[in-house]
Length: 139
Figure 1: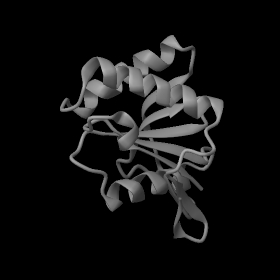
Figure 2 (figure 1 turned 90 degrees about the horizontal axis):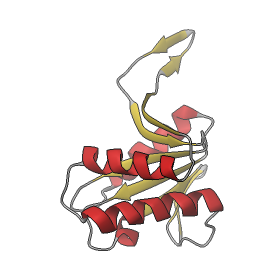
Figure 3 (figure 1 turned 180 degrees about the vertical axis):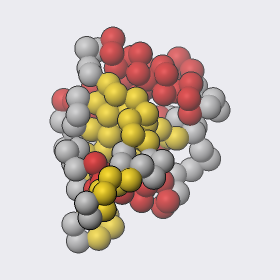
Figure 4 (figure 1 turned 60 degrees about the horizontal axis):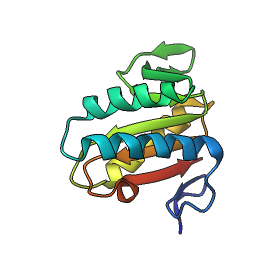
């Protein structure tokens, strides 16, 4: 299923085009979820996922500031990317009852503003089966 948010941004939810990096990230997240289960704070999942991704030899940046470029000014508006993996994929971590449209919009905005990453993963760890909490995004 391909859901269009606007003509330039799409949300992939069917998993039909998993590349090796995305597959590796999802595998790491599944390992973390199997060990911890649902119902913890986002910060716990973030710390464990960082550890797991680095064990797999991946470059991970955590809580990366995302400034806004407006005209000739760089503004720090408080945006922080949970994780950036290999400078290719933004990961937004959640631990909520369900993914809401605002969570999807948040990640899509990050992808648009960051510029160099065209793919993102929204991972909600507060589910029984982690595959039910993963949304793949691309712009």
